[in-house]
Image 1 (cartoon, rainbow, N blue to C red):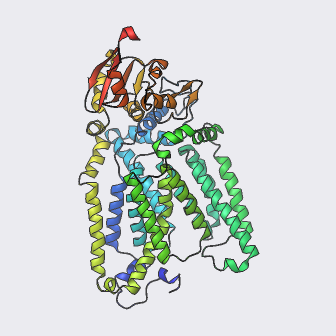
Image 2 (image 1 turned 60 degrees about the horizontal axis):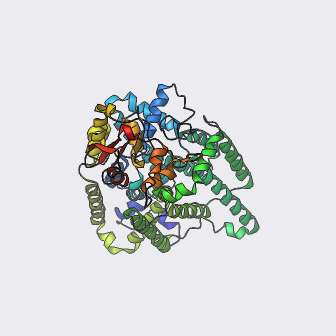
Image 3 (image 1 turned 90 degrees about the horizontal axis):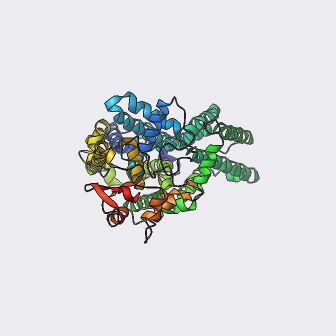
Length: 528
């Protein structure tokens, strides 16, 4: 069997009617496709539990109230208020706030639907570049989305997933001879640079594609016989020059943003902060100690085995992109969803290759195609049962009645309600745990927080807030001087957490509120 035969309908008699439908590029099993889509939507719809969502929403709401004018310095913390803040997702924040405020009580649900649409767009665009049938693509999307579940939800980073999918989709169209699609790259990066700082991943990918294309052209010129073995287009030098020009234009248009070149400075500073990279979980290497890591590695092993058995194509561009992003994903958790997204077309092609092999070689599959299909449907049903019968109910509750929803989560909504009623009994400079900063900015908009997800790389003189936070909460001997350094006179911290244990034993601090989630401490006036 040659390596192209699996992309056409198997030439068998009646099988045939069911088995070959899976391997035809344009036909599919509508019932299975519909169930796969429903399963995927269940994964894409997630409640508003992302820790950083709160400060993004607060930024967007304040942006709207100030006529789309971004603050010059940080308006939300009392620890580094003079920091020259660059919010690289300002436009996304504003769009989220528009939806949240304009839809009233359904605003949260509107935001959830927005991010579900962004995730769906990213996965569908990525799958669209596969050569496989619609059912094979749908199955690969469902599988990859389930593996990516820990990374999905109302996260601003989903914008970059969609942007990356757009880059590869436009590149695929260009390879097919759609020259005019090149100009869409510039428009994409102009928008993306104002939606999320992850546009640099898109520029990196486009640059990588350009570099591999140049390499392929040089090799093809020197060894013409090699080009006949390659299963993807080898571009001409004229086409390569067009891409180089578009890459340069795309790079330049990213400077059209409220911060100009400072946007790049903020990104470089963050990515170059070794302490932040070493301490934050999302920048750690993939670990088998985590369930998500084990599932991811199993997926990689499955891809490798299927490639070993069925994949015979020579595709340098695909190899380069997948290889680089695989290495990046293993280096940092944060990059795992990028590789998963980029692997969807390969997974779809491999699924189709495997099914084609089963159709041609497997008598059991030929005799009982309906039973096989039933098995797939049952697996999907079990997957949806794993999500829980109340999953969509919880999603809707988080969007329609967020206070009621958060009261049933680990977030301290009950404590927030107590603070609103007893604010005069508390101090003026708050300590909060890192994961609570965004949540507090959402629900207590008038409070200045100690730290949140924006601030790990912020440093002015001796005020390195993230380092000080780690010294206070993670050192064997907590650096209690940090509290005095920032004038902290009240605190909300996780019950039985490190700061809770410290403050309970410190003279001058008293508990004003406690539940199973958090305790609120206040420093006595004489000890201020």
